Image 1 (tube, rainbow, N blue to C red):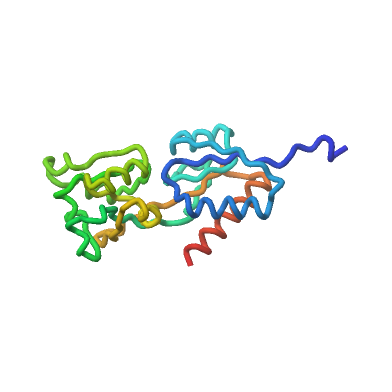
Image 2 (cartoon, rainbow, N blue to C red):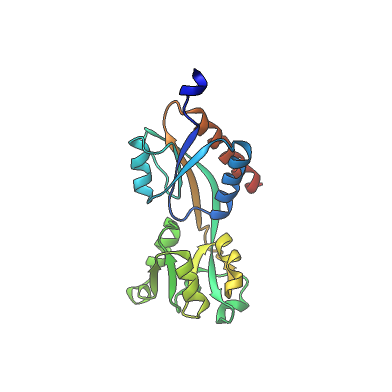
Length: 213
C-alpha cells in the first residue's frame, strides 16, 4: 500500500541569473549520478522572485548571487568567483599582466547586471559623470562577449566565464585592485526540510569544498 500511495521523489529547484554554470553543472551531474530517481523541476527566476517563492513554498531550494538576512530563509555561501576583464585579442591593454578599474576608464565598459558585485559597481560608478557614459549594461554574458570580441570595448565578468569564451576571440586579465567577487548562495526555507532537499544541500556543499580546494 505504501508503494502505491507514495509520491515520487521530486525537487523544485530555482536558479537566478548569473550563477556559475560550471559549478552548477557539476552539482547537477552529482545529483543525477547519486539519485537518478529524483526528478528535478527547474525554475529560472530573478533573485527577488526566488526568495519570494521560497517564502511562499513554491520552491524547495534555490541558488543565487544574492544574500539574504530573512529569518524564514536559510542562506549559506557556496562558491566564490573573482571578476576579471574581458578584452578583444588585439587591444592596447593586453601588454599588462593585470588591470585596475582606473585602467578601463578610457574605453567603453560592458557589464552584465546579473553578476552583482557591490564593490565593483561602486568603483565603476565613482568616477566623474563624463566617464560613466562609457558604462553600458547588457542582458547576458553572451551579449557582452559579442561586443567585446567585435572590438567595441571591454567587459567585466567572472573569470571562469571569460576563460571559457577564449575561443570567441576574447582575452582575460585579472583585476588587482579588488577583491571583486561574486558569491553563489544556497537558499532554502528555514526549519525542517524534506530529505531530498537536505541531500541536495549536502552535495552542493561538497561541490563547493571540492572546487574551492
